[in-house]
Length: 414
Ligand SMILES: [Zn+2]
Image 1 (cartoon, protein in one colour):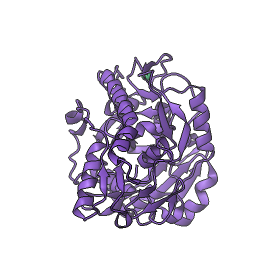
Image 2 (spheres, rainbow, N blue to C red):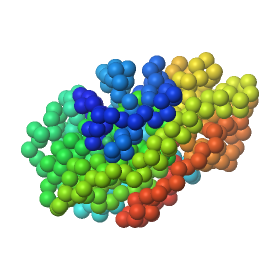
Image 3 (spheres, protein in one colour):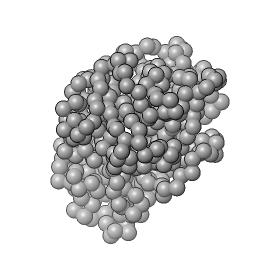
Image 4 (cartoon, protein in one colour):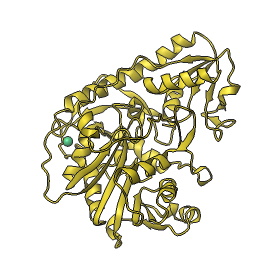
């Protein structure tokens, strides 16, 4: 986890001072990215110049986010593979391993090289990358020294840097920035700094969330930036990079891209799809605000459980205080524990008289419901409000350079 910079004010991407509020009448209850409900609510804005969708960073937001970073809980090393993904067959695989496989395949990484993961945390991604490219030297960066001992114990031979990126004299064939850019107040400056650390021929891999495919991204308070394929590409262009591979299919509901230094700087024009992105944001906020009432009506007085203990489940429990009796989770590491003071049950231990809400984007919720049904779990399943997936105007172009050969996976942990 890399904490964000000091706020520079204005648009995160282009610095424009005056942002346009999105649905100013709507404020959204939030959780922290380490899954704790918060008292503060968030508002959203779109930049009239570059089209970046972002949180309104007022004093209340700054105070809330400073408190989140001061108390941040990283998943402990013992459960380093915590972020499991479940395919449609129910088989679990660490999210970081899927990412590492997709990266190596999409950009044809050579058998040898040196990789630096920025915001490496407990080394989850580096650990997975080593399985995919065992001969690569893997290195990690965090602003603080706090991760060093645990990381080095977990990954013998790992090189760890802390402090400032500018102080690093080594150069790298690949730099990775996974689930960090959405936290940054100056993403373009970060990408420029990263570019200075590349060996000739090297590239930068960025993975981030997509609120257009997963509205629960909006409820994460410390995600100040909510990227679209267009604005993430624009961040690269503004940093002097050119996109060489990109996909929103590497991990479902996320955006991934790989970029290399541009020989001649490209022009960063206004985002022609900004108005649609702002509409999508407003639509998603309204969808989220409708969720609790949908659940209440469908539960019809039955004991209520929430399927999933990560962001979406935590958020829903937070906006329905006193109405939830338990959580359900497929991850054996979580079963039998407690979350927000409530027990976490395995699907097979869930009372048949209960109603369980699947707190996921609609398509994923439907797939999970079908799988639970197939496995004979006959408790009532509450699906989210009807969900219209936004048309992806840029999808064809966006996926043009990458053939996504893996079957789509849905995410169970975010
Ligand atoms: Zn802007």
